[in-house]
Image (cartoon, rainbow, N blue to C red):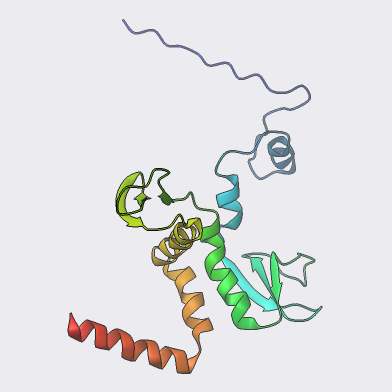
Length: 172
């Protein structure tokens, strides 16, 4: 016969478990606790939007936020396309690093690891390479974030991208 074990959770003094999760007392309860390891990723995950900043330029704000409501942009730029780029890459900056470099080089260079498995080598120890690959990996897995880049691209560059991509696909 299996025995049931009970888990006892001790709350810090003065905190009580709320009845409604989004009630003011629940938010106060959460504010009194340590953040989970996923907090940073959640903070930058978005979705994001871009709007004019009354101080000049363009701000990137979280969904449901607005400058008119008194929310401060996460970042601001003088040019709209730069704000769109930031909106696209912000979620990738919070992801765990799926790509990283191994510490011990071999004859081909430093191992490039993806989720712990060797997927390539870099002649030089370039952490910025694997950080950039992680952000691009995040963009490739999020059509909504990638769409910010397409919008920021502009017409001339979009036409050029189309020609280059079509040419590469034709060559196989």
